[in-house]
Image 1 (cartoon, each protein chain N blue to C red):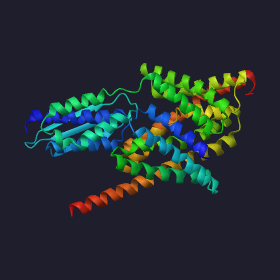
Image 2 (image 1 turned 180 degrees about the horizontal axis):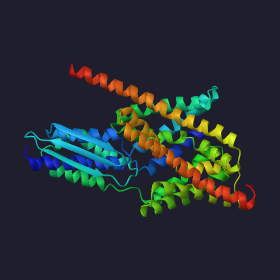
Image 3 (image 1 turned 90 degrees about the vertical axis):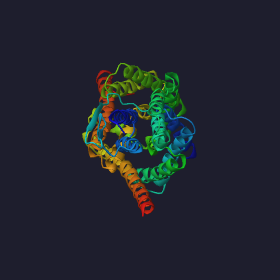
Image 4 (image 1 turned 45 degrees about the vertical axis):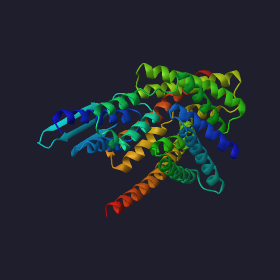
Length: 259
Length: 146
């Protein structure tokens, strides 16, 4: 295998890793995928170091040259379908060993996997908020109110995400919106169980993914990533509390309490 | 209780769409959410504390997710992330914030510790099961190579 081919392999491996990491995969899955692709192409000495914000990998060729690549990860969203697809590709990588171009094409296709449309996402978020309100002990009246808050929270967070504003700020705004809309609806007299409504709405923002990945990274021995993600989860929770607390404090000091 | 399980399934279904899961995996993820909430309520009913019920529920959904991942050949995260969502202590977070805003710090502290221990219980449950499943896979690989 000549140097040019090895270069291409490194690029493919890092690209596959990037897709997994950007869409909410665990650290060990990224390293595993990179190693699997390298092994399939007969590249023996491949090392990678992955954190939630970047991938570093290097490969030593048979004649002693070292090729390395650093990939910075800027965006992090959740798109589990892409992870499924890359995972499937890396399981069957030996089928495609002959043509690097084909793998490149498949990876490109995976990267362009469409999300559900914004309308659909917002609709289902509203539903999720509604049903969480019901689970927490709200009535059907609260269910419909939660549909409204859920709609506004998700629309706002999609809008802010497109402006590439930091996750922390989005959560502050989300928490503030959940509280503000619930307070207004409550003031009008449309809400039966105020607390349950707010809880159901902020469930849309809770850091479920960060918690799960923090645990899974820690077990796999990726302590740096595990700690980073645990802090991410904690920051999300703090952000929600700051946002909703700010509005609630302001409301109580102006109107003298929640009716 | 069954009705609440159904609600939990539907809420998790919403999250499956938000996380962009496609195909039949949506149904399995939603089912996981239902199982999570059902077992949480069940263990509370037989007098487990909230933290212990969280722990048991997270163990059950972790097992469910590991099995489903093997059956469908999909990453475990697809199922764990969605099923875990109903158990995340959003209520605890909210009440902690509420009490600290209204000025009753001792209550806020108590609720805060409760919330943290619930989240810790969730984490420990998933941790336990994934460690065991890792052990099993490694044991299998060793047997193959012998």
